[in-house]
Length: 236
Image (cartoon, rainbow, N blue to C red):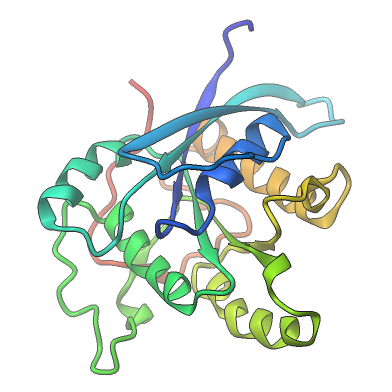
Protein backbone atom coordinates (compact mmCIF):
# COMPACT_ATOMS: atom_id res chain seq x y z
CA UNK A 1 0.00 0.00 0.00
CA UNK A 2 1.08 3.57 -0.62
CA UNK A 3 2.09 5.66 2.36
CA UNK A 4 -0.95 7.29 3.94
CA UNK A 5 -1.54 9.62 6.86
CA UNK A 6 -2.78 7.73 9.89
CA UNK A 7 -4.55 8.14 13.20
CA UNK A 8 -4.37 6.05 16.36
CA UNK A 9 -7.57 4.77 17.98
CA UNK A 10 -7.57 2.82 21.26
CA UNK A 11 -10.02 -0.07 21.70
CA UNK A 12 -10.66 -0.43 25.44
CA UNK A 13 -12.87 -2.64 27.58
CA UNK A 14 -12.82 -5.64 29.90
CA UNK A 15 -11.35 -8.96 28.87
CA UNK A 16 -13.88 -11.16 27.14
CA UNK A 17 -16.15 -8.41 25.78
CA UNK A 18 -15.08 -9.14 22.20
CA UNK A 19 -12.55 -6.40 21.41
CA UNK A 20 -10.36 -8.66 19.25
CA UNK A 21 -13.38 -9.94 17.34
CA UNK A 22 -14.56 -6.38 16.81
CA UNK A 23 -11.19 -5.15 15.56
CA UNK A 24 -10.90 -8.10 13.18
CA UNK A 25 -14.37 -7.37 11.83
CA UNK A 26 -13.59 -3.67 11.40
CA UNK A 27 -10.26 -4.23 9.67
CA UNK A 28 -10.78 -7.46 7.72
CA UNK A 29 -14.57 -7.38 7.26
CA UNK A 30 -14.55 -10.99 8.40
CA UNK A 31 -15.59 -12.88 11.51
CA UNK A 32 -12.72 -13.95 13.76
CA UNK A 33 -13.19 -17.71 13.96
CA UNK A 34 -11.00 -18.50 16.97
CA UNK A 35 -10.54 -15.42 19.16
CA UNK A 36 -7.92 -15.60 21.91
CA UNK A 37 -6.95 -13.44 24.87
CA UNK A 38 -4.92 -10.35 23.98
CA UNK A 39 -1.66 -10.08 25.89
CA UNK A 40 -0.34 -6.53 26.01
CA UNK A 41 -1.65 -4.89 22.87
CA UNK A 42 -2.54 -5.98 19.35
CA UNK A 43 -2.64 -3.49 16.46
CA UNK A 44 -4.56 -3.83 13.20
CA UNK A 45 -5.20 -1.29 10.45
CA UNK A 46 -8.38 -0.22 8.70
CA UNK A 47 -8.41 1.84 5.51
CA UNK A 48 -10.92 4.69 5.78
CA UNK A 49 -12.09 7.22 3.20
CA UNK A 50 -12.50 10.54 4.97
CA UNK A 51 -15.57 12.50 3.79
CA UNK A 52 -16.30 9.83 1.22
CA UNK A 53 -18.14 11.10 -1.86
CA UNK A 54 -17.16 14.74 -1.37
CA UNK A 55 -14.44 16.90 -2.97
CA UNK A 56 -12.51 16.62 0.32
CA UNK A 57 -12.37 12.81 0.18
CA UNK A 58 -9.01 11.38 1.21
CA UNK A 59 -7.85 7.93 2.31
CA UNK A 60 -6.31 7.37 5.74
CA UNK A 61 -5.04 4.48 7.82
CA UNK A 62 -6.92 3.92 11.08
CA UNK A 63 -4.67 2.11 13.55
CA UNK A 64 -6.83 0.18 16.02
CA UNK A 65 -4.94 -0.62 19.23
CA UNK A 66 -6.64 -3.49 21.06
CA UNK A 67 -5.41 -3.16 24.65
CA UNK A 68 -5.62 -6.31 26.76
CA UNK A 69 -5.91 -6.76 30.50
CA UNK A 70 -8.34 -5.84 33.24
CA UNK A 71 -9.22 -2.39 34.51
CA UNK A 72 -8.70 -3.75 38.04
CA UNK A 73 -5.12 -4.81 37.33
CA UNK A 74 -2.25 -4.07 39.69
CA UNK A 75 -0.59 -0.67 39.39
CA UNK A 76 2.47 -2.25 37.77
CA UNK A 77 0.29 -3.65 34.97
CA UNK A 78 -1.44 -0.30 34.51
CA UNK A 79 1.94 1.42 34.31
CA UNK A 80 2.97 -0.98 31.57
CA UNK A 81 -0.30 -0.34 29.72
CA UNK A 82 0.22 3.42 29.89
CA UNK A 83 2.74 3.26 27.05
CA UNK A 84 -0.11 2.34 24.70
CA UNK A 85 -1.99 5.52 25.61
CA UNK A 86 0.52 7.92 24.06
CA UNK A 87 -0.47 10.01 21.02
CA UNK A 88 -4.08 8.86 21.01
CA UNK A 89 -6.49 10.42 18.52
CA UNK A 90 -9.68 8.54 19.38
CA UNK A 91 -11.08 5.87 21.71
CA UNK A 92 -13.60 3.07 21.15
CA UNK A 93 -15.07 1.87 24.45
CA UNK A 94 -16.35 -1.72 24.20
CA UNK A 95 -18.72 -3.45 26.62
CA UNK A 96 -20.63 -6.72 26.70
CA UNK A 97 -24.39 -6.07 26.62
CA UNK A 98 -24.95 -9.20 28.71
CA UNK A 99 -22.48 -8.10 31.42
CA UNK A 100 -23.44 -5.03 33.49
CA UNK A 101 -20.01 -4.88 35.12
CA UNK A 102 -18.28 -4.47 31.77
CA UNK A 103 -20.52 -1.47 31.07
CA UNK A 104 -19.79 0.14 34.44
CA UNK A 105 -16.05 -0.43 34.00
CA UNK A 106 -15.95 1.79 30.89
CA UNK A 107 -15.74 4.80 33.22
CA UNK A 108 -12.62 3.34 34.82
CA UNK A 109 -11.10 2.51 31.45
CA UNK A 110 -11.68 6.05 30.22
CA UNK A 111 -10.12 7.52 33.36
CA UNK A 112 -7.08 5.29 32.99
CA UNK A 113 -6.53 6.19 29.34
CA UNK A 114 -7.36 9.90 29.46
CA UNK A 115 -5.69 10.68 32.79
CA UNK A 116 -2.87 8.19 32.96
CA UNK A 117 -0.62 10.67 34.75
CA UNK A 118 -3.17 11.64 37.37
CA UNK A 119 -4.56 10.11 40.56
CA UNK A 120 -8.38 10.07 40.23
CA UNK A 121 -9.05 11.15 43.81
CA UNK A 122 -12.50 12.45 44.58
CA UNK A 123 -14.01 10.71 41.59
CA UNK A 124 -15.76 7.82 43.33
CA UNK A 125 -18.88 8.62 45.28
CA UNK A 126 -20.36 6.61 48.13
CA UNK A 127 -22.53 4.32 46.02
CA UNK A 128 -19.53 3.17 43.97
CA UNK A 129 -20.59 5.06 40.86
CA UNK A 130 -18.64 7.90 39.28
CA UNK A 131 -19.42 11.55 39.84
CA UNK A 132 -19.39 12.48 36.17
CA UNK A 133 -19.56 16.20 36.89
CA UNK A 134 -16.05 15.97 38.32
CA UNK A 135 -14.70 14.71 35.02
CA UNK A 136 -12.65 17.26 33.10
CA UNK A 137 -13.45 18.34 29.56
CA UNK A 138 -12.53 15.73 26.99
CA UNK A 139 -11.73 16.59 23.40
CA UNK A 140 -10.77 13.13 22.19
CA UNK A 141 -13.57 11.62 20.06
CA UNK A 142 -15.22 8.59 21.67
CA UNK A 143 -17.44 5.81 20.39
CA UNK A 144 -19.29 3.30 22.60
CA UNK A 145 -19.85 -0.19 21.17
CA UNK A 146 -21.96 -2.88 22.83
CA UNK A 147 -21.27 -6.46 21.77
CA UNK A 148 -23.06 -9.82 21.97
CA UNK A 149 -26.41 -8.36 20.96
CA UNK A 150 -27.31 -11.79 19.59
CA UNK A 151 -27.18 -13.25 23.12
CA UNK A 152 -30.01 -11.04 24.37
CA UNK A 153 -33.49 -12.47 23.87
CA UNK A 154 -35.75 -10.29 21.75
CA UNK A 155 -38.10 -9.79 24.69
CA UNK A 156 -35.24 -8.38 26.80
CA UNK A 157 -33.50 -6.19 24.23
CA UNK A 158 -35.48 -3.02 24.86
CA UNK A 159 -34.83 -3.27 28.59
CA UNK A 160 -31.11 -3.91 28.16
CA UNK A 161 -30.56 -1.23 25.52
CA UNK A 162 -32.48 1.31 27.56
CA UNK A 163 -30.25 0.54 30.54
CA UNK A 164 -27.03 0.88 28.56
CA UNK A 165 -28.07 3.95 26.57
CA UNK A 166 -26.84 6.20 29.40
CA UNK A 167 -23.26 5.26 28.50
CA UNK A 168 -23.32 7.12 25.21
CA UNK A 169 -24.88 10.14 26.89
CA UNK A 170 -22.33 10.18 29.68
CA UNK A 171 -19.43 9.94 27.26
CA UNK A 172 -21.09 12.36 24.84
CA UNK A 173 -20.57 9.75 22.15
CA UNK A 174 -22.54 7.83 19.58
CA UNK A 175 -23.48 4.24 20.33
CA UNK A 176 -23.36 1.07 18.23
CA UNK A 177 -24.75 -2.28 19.37
CA UNK A 178 -23.90 -5.37 17.38
CA UNK A 179 -22.98 -9.02 17.11
CA UNK A 180 -19.30 -9.42 16.12
CA UNK A 181 -20.09 -12.79 14.52
CA UNK A 182 -22.41 -11.19 11.96
CA UNK A 183 -20.92 -8.67 9.47
CA UNK A 184 -24.38 -7.43 8.49
CA UNK A 185 -24.42 -5.18 11.55
CA UNK A 186 -21.75 -3.05 9.85
CA UNK A 187 -23.01 -3.45 6.28
CA UNK A 188 -22.39 -0.48 3.98
CA UNK A 189 -25.19 2.05 4.24
CA UNK A 190 -26.47 0.75 7.59
CA UNK A 191 -26.97 3.15 10.49
CA UNK A 192 -24.06 1.49 12.33
CA UNK A 193 -21.75 1.93 9.33
CA UNK A 194 -22.72 5.60 9.10
CA UNK A 195 -22.00 6.13 12.82
CA UNK A 196 -18.65 4.38 12.48
CA UNK A 197 -17.65 6.45 9.47
CA UNK A 198 -18.73 9.64 11.22
CA UNK A 199 -16.60 8.74 14.24
CA UNK A 200 -13.49 8.08 12.15
CA UNK A 201 -14.07 11.35 10.26
CA UNK A 202 -14.14 13.21 13.60
CA UNK A 203 -10.92 11.53 14.70
CA UNK A 204 -9.22 12.59 11.46
CA UNK A 205 -10.59 16.13 11.68
CA UNK A 206 -9.25 16.52 15.20
CA UNK A 207 -5.83 15.20 14.22
CA UNK A 208 -5.31 16.95 10.90
CA UNK A 209 -7.79 19.78 10.34
CA UNK A 210 -8.73 21.47 13.61
CA UNK A 211 -6.38 23.79 15.41
CA UNK A 212 -5.29 22.77 18.89
CA UNK A 213 -7.95 23.57 21.47
CA UNK A 214 -10.84 23.61 19.01
CA UNK A 215 -13.77 21.37 19.86
CA UNK A 216 -14.87 18.60 17.56
CA UNK A 217 -18.29 19.35 16.03
CA UNK A 218 -20.84 17.24 17.88
CA UNK A 219 -18.67 17.04 21.01
CA UNK A 220 -19.78 20.06 23.09
CA UNK A 221 -17.62 21.50 25.84
CA UNK A 222 -18.88 19.55 28.87
CA UNK A 223 -17.22 18.23 32.02
CA UNK A 224 -16.98 14.47 31.61
CA UNK A 225 -13.58 13.03 32.35
CA UNK A 226 -11.11 13.19 35.30
CA UNK A 227 -9.41 16.44 36.31
CA UNK A 228 -6.28 17.88 34.78
CA UNK A 229 -5.08 19.05 31.40
CA UNK A 230 -4.62 16.64 28.54
CA UNK A 231 -1.36 16.86 26.66
CA UNK A 232 -1.35 17.84 23.00
CA UNK A 233 -1.84 14.61 21.07
CA UNK A 234 0.06 14.25 17.83
CA UNK A 235 2.47 12.07 15.94
CA UNK A 236 6.09 13.04 16.14
